[in-house]
Image (tube, rainbow, N blue to C red; front, side, top):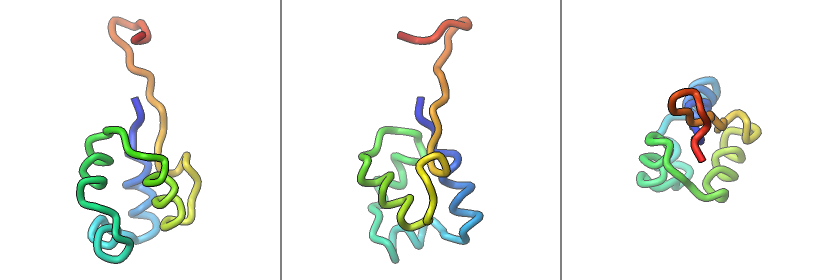
Length: 74
């Protein structure tokens, strides 16, 4: 599973709000919702977030292995 929890922390660190992403940087509210729900987004959206926040991909997202009963999911 891809988690965008790091995105929200990086935004706090940089002083950029969700409102600013939507109004100032023209990120669609739908993309913000997808990020909040850890749903898939395009690499363009990730690239845009990194450009706005002046950070790397690892500051925006991370992979967390899905496990069920201690075994990785296929």
